Image (cartoon, rainbow, N blue to C red; front, side, top):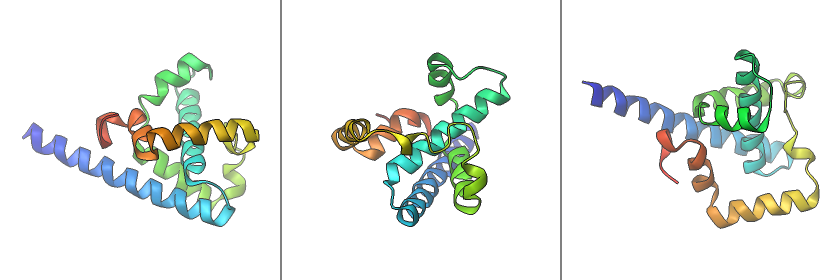
Amino acid sequence: MLDILSNELEAAESDAYRDARMIAGEIADNEALDTDIVFSDAMHVAVALALEDADMPYTRANAAWMFDRIHPAEVREILLYRRDYPEQYAMLPKACALENLTTAQMEAASAITETLGADRLNAMFFCDTVGTA
């Protein structure tokens, strides 16, 4: 019985990840941005909000710890909010921070994404639910 529930949970999380990637692509097309940047931005917002809820400061250590606890469904909800309410989204903590990176920073991030592949990079964050790195 636990295996069935575990498989259903994994399937739901995998579906949420695919949906989130699709929504990120939609936003990226509309805003002339890279899909991976939009998706990563939503991940950072989800982490920042979760840290606020946990009454923890946004530090590197806390953010790294919280990234392990964010699920694709949460990122999907953040992306839906961005798509439907872009002005309000921009006011969330860490929102659009990745879009303000310098050209050199963007190139470095793109190089990592190209080397690993976007799905493999995201698997590092969602390894328990969408695959392994």
